[in-house]
Image (cartoon, rainbow, N blue to C red; front, side, top):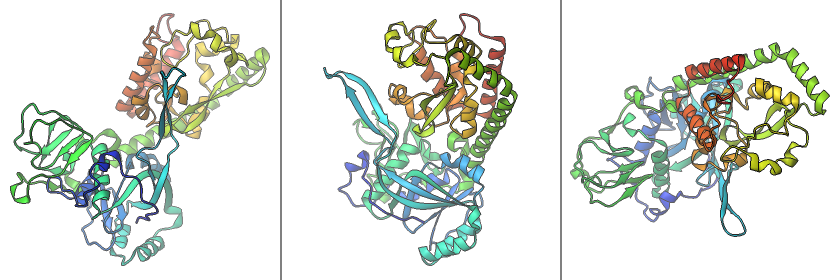
Amino acid sequence: MIQHSQTSLIGPATAARESSTASPIIWGLTPRDLHDAFWNARGVQCVRRGESAPLQRAAELFLLLEPGQMVIFNVAQLSERLTWRNALLTRLRLVDEQARSYRERVVVDERGLVQRIERHYRPEVRGSWRAVLTSSRRIAGIWMAAPSRREGWVRVRRSVAWSRVDHFKCPGIARLEGDGAQERHVLDAIVQRWSTPAQSIEGIEEWQPGVWRVAGEPSVEDAVRVGPLWLGHGWAMADRQCLVGPRWLPDRVPPGDRRGAVKIRAISQVELADVPRAVSGRAAGLTYAFVKRTLDVALSAAALVVLLPLIVLIAMLIVLEDGLPIVFGHTRQGRGGRPFRCLKFRTMHRHAEQIARELEAYNVCDGPQVYIRDDPRVTRVGRWLRKTHLDEVPQFFNVLFGHMSLVGPRPSPDDENQYCPAWRDTRLSVRPGITGLWQLNRTRGPGEDFQEWIKYDIEYVQRASTWLDLNIMVKTAWIILRGRPEHAPQ
């Protein structure tokens, strides 16, 4: 159920091949076959209007499409929304962006030396489409039997109460089967997003890390192959030319000479054990998202109620020593790079930012952070708040508003994120947290603080689970109650 409003730019990997209009074939499979296999691996069945196909009972979601339509978007980012909205029908507006959801530029000084790399997370929209997700087999059947798009939507709308329909805008692409250039764009997106195609494609194997080929096909030894890379029939037997991904190469042998049988598994046969956590079955993802958000709301609300008398006392002390304001809000980047005001009790004098440059020589941190021992900008009340970590109490409001989580990567401003382009997207894929692995394990060692910040934030994103969140919260509470030794991590 797609509305095509504008043709988008073709990605870099596609541009080199756009002169060819023939449909590419990989492992004997068409781009549509690979597209549907990609969604099967996520527990989603593609249902196209006017095409008769059995609805798989193992499917957790149905993606309603027009004939010949292929769409790619990140269904994992919808897990929380699908949990909380409890919608029977989710209408998606897929926003097509110019190859990426940000703009990047190199900033140099007057001598031409690179100062930093800036990335701005405001997308350059090239077009948009409509797609629909539903968990109802009945609605999927109604859509499949509809004679036209308009009639299909009318029938679906009549069978679903408006209160059970949700609307969401997310980045994605939509392309048509039969157009070689558009099919190649879809394959580019799939190869970059799908690291384990053997989940739902039988008869292929991972020859080298990230390099996939037909199982058992003879190959040239010592050939340089860097994934993500999909080698069609005949490429594993090619010469020693260097092949670097992200890239896919179509079959180079006629159908009669292809080795091995490659086929698409049904959703019930998908090898979920190999699926990354972010998309390892909708049930697991929804459960973790639901539990995490429930804990965030419940514990933050409880903490604010219990700490209310202390909050009033702290506010009075701040005003008596240095006047208003009581709370300081610094702009940080949340999930997806969206800016928000991270709240803290003010611990510095009102004019602290004006003298920050004068104190740069005393900064003991590497990277973009600033940490000055015995910082003269900090007030007497501020020193006590920082030592007891009570300056971060207002962040419980950020958690209630959905800007932050109790546990997650350190919330950082845009100018700090410019210093870590290689890791930035991973850190910004989840909500930032009040506490996290970095806050527990950092050493403040000379030349190590920035590296530790990146290391522990990335480790949290890779290991995130309910058990890890609870473990971090308990350890944080224990450290606050007993205090840190003078030379322990701060």
